[in-house]
Image (tube, rainbow, N blue to C red):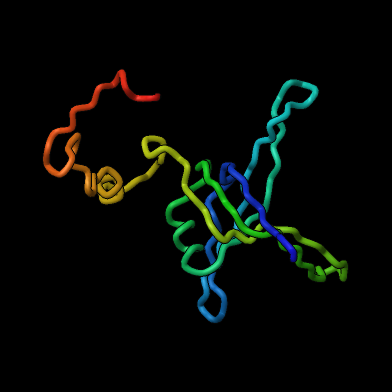
Length: 146
């Protein structure tokens, strides 16, 4: 059995670059900055930068919804590819192939959000307030374990 799983939470360093292959498959690429838990000798947290690639409809979705500076969680796999550059040298590139992502950016911090997106995000689907089957719920806050 083999396992190749990468999981990280970080910020997008720039808007994703969305392109299409000749067969019209969407592919987006960018970089995510992930802050380390430990600090360096100057007392500053260090940051790692990872190249990311995402394919298909997910590439279009991530390009539309995740912008520069947004906090995002990603999971996927590491991939190393190589090619020969114009000088004839072999170049190796390691990237994360994103399979899943989540926007962790708070809605009130997102820039350029359209009104329809805002209205959709604030909808209360299925939220009937403090009721249970149309009847008010009597909750004693002193009895809650948190």
